[in-house]
Image (tube, rainbow, N blue to C red; front, side, top):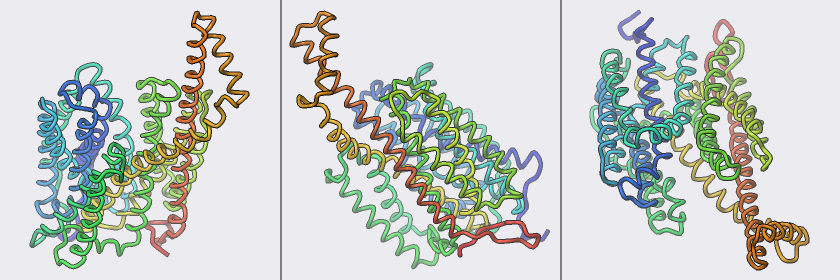
Length: 523
């Protein structure tokens, strides 16, 4: 092996390195969702309003999405070993200070710092895992990393709810400290600098400023838009315009400077383009369905938070096992076929979720979600492989940042889209259903009369029983409206995933000399 060739870790060293990197990535992903179930307790403890407390999540997301695309440049600038270990240390310290915060804006500040450090963990961990395996074992790397990014967001809300109920909200941050200290020690010992990476001669401060404005503004719009009634708010309009201007300025800057903070010329690699398109749409589906599923089961079907959480975890574990099983298919089944099959499986699984009713029991959701996670298990490793599988060195660090950024943005966009859709579609569904509940509807009058008789038998006066009967019908209308709206939401995500199918069909498998499928190229 020549001096220019990368040295790959072996044996226990490799797996300590991989487990450390994935643990940090999972820690970052868990912290993106662990706070959500504890916001009520946090707001009550620190005296924040419902609108103000949302900044605890928003600040983390903004910090996260700003750094992710810059992580490749920062890794090359400081060296991957120093940058990754430093990110772990800052993330751990910020977690400690979040737990010690007694005021809202102090907590928001440290959540922002935590998000900045966390952004460096996620994409750098991806390049560490991929770089720990030689090209002929790359599929093992993709599956290993994909398992982590699939399970992290699922465990976050459940873990956060359990810790908050048994201890206090402070401990959702304190639990990061021992894990972070251990990860920092192992990172410094086992993480090496990226082979082939080049330290930039100058820092592209303008590019960094433009991407921070663009992504920070867009993340704010996606996180806060629903609260401020979207473009009815001058604040949302301002940040949306700032985001567009920031993206235009950033694109111009990165394509004209000699040392770009983010090398957009990587998109000449069509594999990266296709992988990122699929990553964006799959991220929208994953986060969007995880967002509406608890609202459906708890809001319309009467499930508890514990039931919903346990349900999601079991499905996630099945998905992780499916990834391991899917890896066994790699030697004989091409990644294009696996990804296409996974997309079709996900579409099929979303259809019964879009046909839920008040009679739907847990089995009506369990098996579709199991099937959905099996399909996702076939998609994610091949999606990562498609995006960055044939890249190494400096290009790998930059590409992992771009891919991770689009997956994160896809998740935020998915939640925003389903929020807009359920609001607007809910109004349409309510208008349609309300036409069947009026003084002129025989069926409505009959049900109201039956309900009124029940209230009269319970001792209500005539006027009170009539009013109570129509309130029952109104509540039934609201529940039915909510259920139908969420059903339509699942069908919407099925359509989004269907958009990935023609993208996959544009890919062809490149054959090696022994006839096996190795990488994927564009027609």
